[in-house]
Image (cartoon, rainbow, N blue to C red; front, side, top):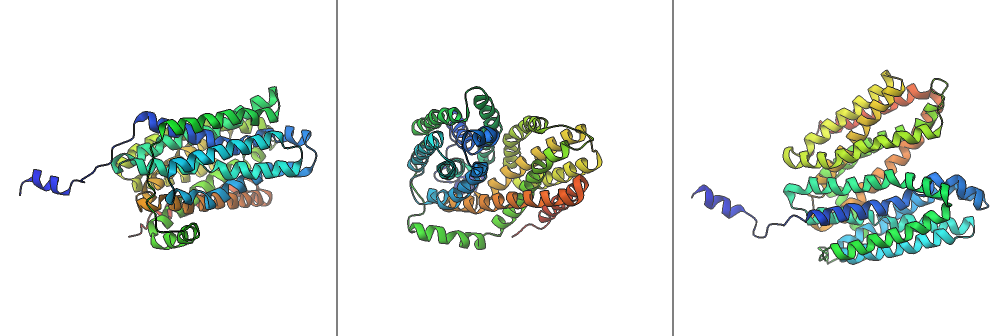
Length: 397
């Protein structure tokens, strides 16, 4: 048998066509717009507290994050059961309604309810990511996921800047009013660009869909390793950003929260790293990228501990952002290859654990700071970085 015949016999009968660049960029933009709504309240919290009576207003960002976590668990798995384009459009419309409620809420109680709904329906960003993985052929999945995740990162980075600017000029309610047409524009973009897709899991009820999430966790050791590794990476990210403002207020720096905010501009390194990491994962394999990223995270925390200056912080945060995003894209490339019909549920398991790890790491970072200061935080970060690197030394079968 000739080589040509052999190759033909193993070639897929219906190879998946790569989505157009316009479609990928549209999904990236919609993902960024969706996730930005989760973070608008953070820089406006002082204005919101001054305008709305009640100490409960200070919990708006926390409640929004809790709503997002609920959306990850309750809504994102539906992507395996119902047609994804319709689901994404409905969530965007519900998100626009929640933002309207946020803009008109008269008191702290209703404002918290609105914040919960914004977080819940803002999880539409995590509906788009597994859809991108579904549309992508295997040999370019990393590149496409990297582009979509770059859009998500831009949404996170630019949301605080936009909210601070608009609220400073017009007010915090006006920012939420502005977010309504922006969200509807993302819905319109998805209505025009997204193809319709048939759900691949047709034999489950909604209750069965949720109960199957635990079985997926037990079935795939690769999913567990990817989740554990990224929990370490995101934990490192959360530790740094939780303690940074406190560190900069120390007498050796005597800088305020504005300086801490400027470090966010360095997050552009992560945006640039996402597509690049995806391309390398496609060509050389995602495991190599994760190992290198884990080593870079360790290097970042060694820099934080040994080079205690503004220059050291800048170098360290560049390394840390690069590592966290490169690892994220590569781990997503791995987990989305496990089961085509369960990608939304796999995404739920993965993202919920990362979200919880970030919250736990933030709390641990604050406790460590109060007990041992910046040196203690650096020891904590180095230990978690070593753990993340160690997880890659033993790959599951």
